[in-house]
Image (tube, rainbow, N blue to C red):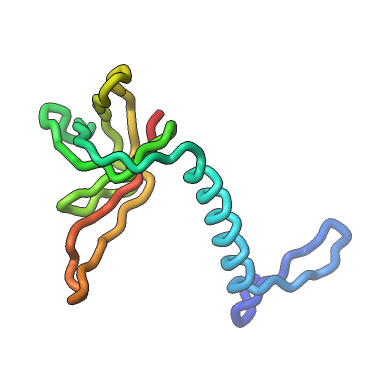
Length: 130
């Protein structure tokens, strides 16, 4: 039951326990951020190269992006436009002395990057590989 920013959660024994949504949201956000940072810290390499993506909504068109860093499970890319979180496609990446990466992918996050005057300079997105 919602009561002025506080919820009442009924325990199995029938007792009420107040939970403050702001505190709960902060805790959930902190846990999610800690888990994401742990995942992102594994084997991340700052590699700037081109990556080609065929988005499922337009599979006949290849779009070229610049990678900013790459890990086993994904990459951060630079884009001239915002990418929708959850958008899926197929990534193709060739690096020297390694097999070509050709894997399904999804946009995990996207954000605008601003210049000193407060204008959008470019966008960055996290691409999760499957």
